Image (cartoon, rainbow, N blue to C red; front, side, top):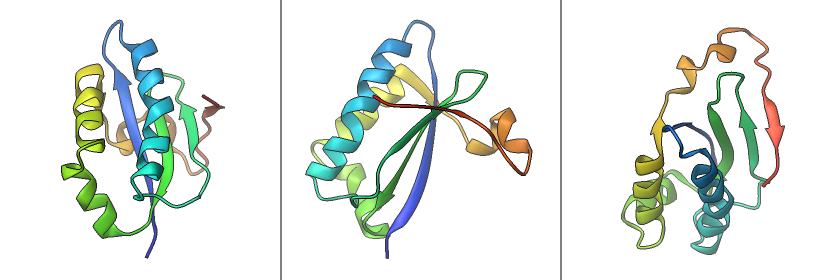
Length: 106
């Protein structure tokens, strides 16, 4: 069963441009590896500079296998070097029933 995910990242100081480049490459790589559906990826930014991407895994198993994938694993290491993974619940804008974000394209 497909699973929608919202991944959120806070860029480390001076790493915002590199993080945006990685965001641009991430979902195409996931798609090329057969891990996500054709659901259109959505990118957004909170008022306090947290970036988020929304995409759809083809299954829970696909999401789990991405950790050991030879292409995706190194990308996730790059994410960790450029940003902090933040729980969506800690983003101030999510504390209301109707959270508003800036949507952007890459």
